[in-house]
Amino acid sequence: MSANILLRGQLAYMREAGFDVTVISAPGDLLDQTAERERVSTIGLEMDRNPNPYKDIVALLKLIRILRRHSPDIIHYSTPKAGFIGSIAARIAGVPIRIYTLRGMRADGLRGFAASALLAMEKVACRFSHFTICVSQSLRERAVELELDRPEKLFVLTPQSSNGIDVARFSRTADTAEQAMRLRKTLGLPDNTKVIGFVGRFSADKGSQELAEAFIELRKTHTDLRLLCIGPNEANSDLPEWVSKLIQSDPNVFSTGMLANPVPAYELIDVLVLPTYREGFPNVVLEAAAMGIPVVATNVTGCTDAVVDGATGSLVEPKDSIALASAIERYLTSEPLRKAHGDAARNRVTNDFQPQAVWNSLLTTYRDALAKKSSFDV
Image (cartoon, rainbow, N blue to C red; front, side, top):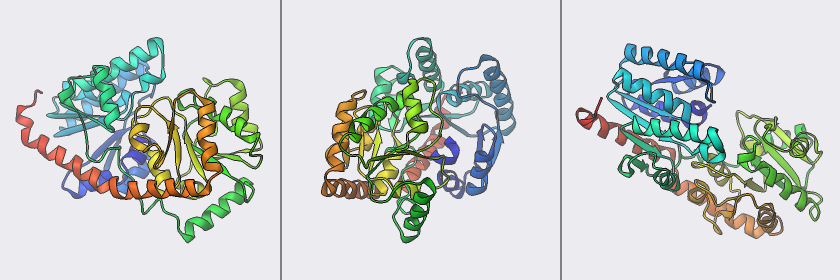
């Protein structure tokens, strides 16, 4: 999923710039789709998202063999598990340039041993790499605070984010309006209702309980309000049972499931809500912004870079469903405010988050690293 979504267009750009690109990831349809769309080579390598000592060792040994066979000049990895395994394998295999992209601090959403284990994995990935790219300035600050590595090895591309946003793709057109109308009918979503949207997986660290509480509170005065969820239909087991039931069976909550093209679903949303506890740089905020939708998010790492509070959306403190409901209420009751912040959000992503700018910044990073590789430790 990371390769298919977060590297969309980036892989083809590097190939066209003269690199021989190979993606190593868990096998499946999404990896096949990535290979076909980007016209790059792929290698399927089984990896679990969560720690699994036996499978992790097997994956590590396989990756070492792959790297020794292919002898890449650069290895670039991301996500805690791929970063952990990839950095160790690359160091053992002697890959000349090792780069880690830190897309978020997953450990911040956990406690106890799980948090400590993930933090340790991040430190290994950073310290076994020649440098680490953080997808936002606030994430870099968090990485420095947690002492993941020396500050001079942690930096942010210009512009921020994982991959920028294709504004042309996330635009309102006659075609997307027609698709949105069909989706509305398929879902059974009534006309002339206000819709708040959520994009992602339902889990505690995404603030799903606070979203449910805010929705219930808002329904007391906005009886026509609906909640539209874009993403996996299943609520995670870390949520209270009543939240799972609301998500799955409340007649005022609608779910699209995973969508290959989420644009028509965004067309149906008046306000996007992201009450997350942690982020790196939330791509859904850029997608909503490109569609001219204001965002209510939390004042946490990543979101503070993606949302300009009071201009493109609103930021509230995490785990505060009352503040969340109040911020959403302001948009529900003021169409001029929704339009002003939505227009400002679209202008910002159009001007500041073009994918080609991100890709070119990364390409410069690669070329600079190649020019200096003789000075890097192996």
